[in-house]
Length: 66
Image (tube, rainbow, N blue to C red; front, side):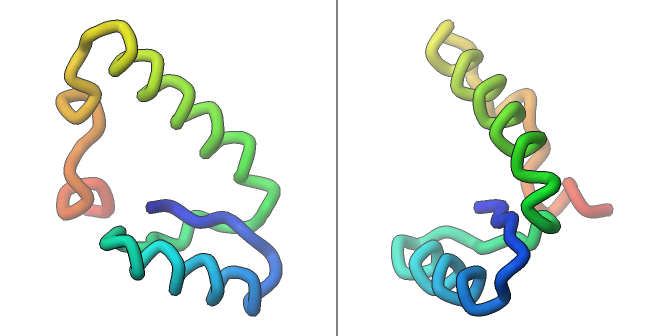
């Protein structure tokens, strides 16, 4: 789960919550990048809602960062 934020304490809390539900918390930059993250999520949700396998469009995390 990508996390954006400028407050380290808030990011630590979000990281703990994400990991508590079984997600890998991925640092995604400051709040200035949050709009990009929201747009990407909207795109993937739209694919899924339209019947596409959204996982086939987004690379697995082990490939996403080189």
